[in-house]
Length: 340
Image (tube, rainbow, N blue to C red):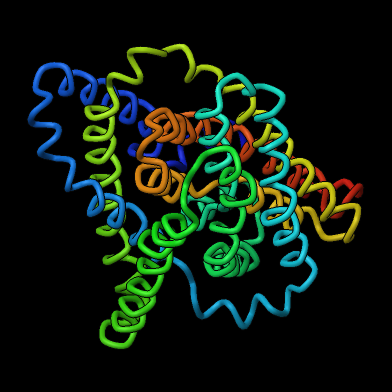
């Protein structure tokens, strides 16, 4: 599969996501300058927008896969180890190396790293030749474990440098992770019982995706309208996020893939599956936490929005690399036999 064909598998909306985010950032800045009173009146809509960003992703979590994923003990263990022990510490290290003089951006970088993706990662993994059943199982586990891990890591890595009460962190995690997951579980269970799985996947899920996109873009407009002054005072600071975040994505993908391949002797398609699931980040949750628990630090929220701008092109590149690895190697170092 060549790169052009790989890009073609993404929907038009997925390919245009970075451009749409940039447009919404610009629209928000313009709104904040031209009509500051209007943007302030729209601020109460942010909690609703954040919930609608996260609920559709949570509704796609295959809760039924939890039992099956228990049988994939090795990959699940490695994924959990990297996601919930190594990743937060690695991003803290990258922040220390590159962002010591910009504590708000450092905090935003940590928020981007503490929770693995539970939505779009399935797309990147599928494009990269991953093992889809294993991919679904790993996503199911990640959706539950991060409920406990997120507030712990925020307090350990950020709470001692930024004065944020532990109760506020727990409240934000409950509002924008626990509640969406509970609502998603009940919704999914009711929909599967009444209409069936095919209707849920083919008709209901696409509608949820449109709701999520509209909520994301609308929230970004309001957020940048409210945070415009902080951005105008330090526009170049955002560019400092590109290098540490890109290094993080590439490092974790190759570390996860190589450990699964050489350490656990997994087939290459399962190895890249682990690689993708320790790389993709839950930027919806990071934005929600930044806007609520870190509302007094505007650049924290702004820095989390940089996540998807960087993540989309980087993950597309990793999907191309993963596909090439799967096509070339059937096992860790065994070239795949191509049929003529």
